[in-house]
Length: 229
Ligand code: DC
Image 1 (cartoon, helix red, strand yellow):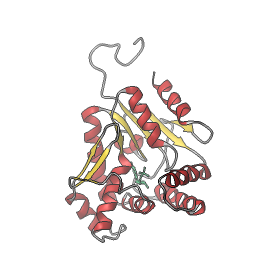
Image 2: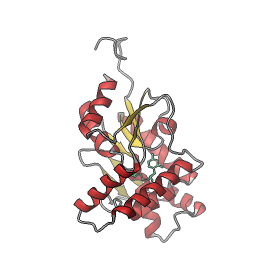
Image 3: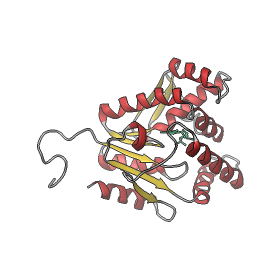
Image 4: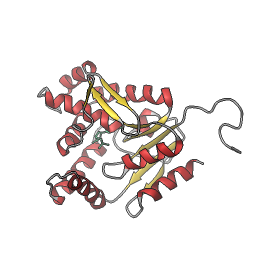
């Protein structure tokens, strides 16, 4: 490919695409489609925080209790298996479906504020990414996990749009939810993820920002893939 990073000869470096942004912005679907278009694994780092939140909840651990969470993070084993339907294992048990509840969303946000938890999970994410490259979605991929990658995208959307998307998703799964409850939870989680002291949700001028409020998923994917070619 003329002018690409591979033209100097030799193998291209392992490609890491960072897709960061708040919840409900379409990161997961976008990342899956970008990964498919590029032939790279899709690595959903939020699922790892959710798995740890589930472990804490099952053991009756307060998701703000830093000391006990640090011990938990170093004791449990979390595996992430990329694929068309990525799976998350907690000590070998497939917990993929169990971590997608509103309760686990808030619990994951709580545990993700604990520096010791982040240390363990960031290491796991770096190992996975270095092994095969990938499209990594999260909050701090371009700032902390792979700050050296030149391929960084930050997805945004207005909170009401994000809450509406989440609400529709939950309704489609047959869950009984109120839109206002989802909107309040979206705003609360944004505030918590953006204001924590360790790796807050931020972007800088090394990112390409994509406001997805008025775009279809297809348009978002085309922008990202287009920016990479
Ligand atoms: O993307 P998600 O909603 O599944 O993420 C769940 C929580 O995990 C979210 O509130 C913030 C946290 N998280 C994080 O702190 N860093 C990441 N790289 C991914 C998720």
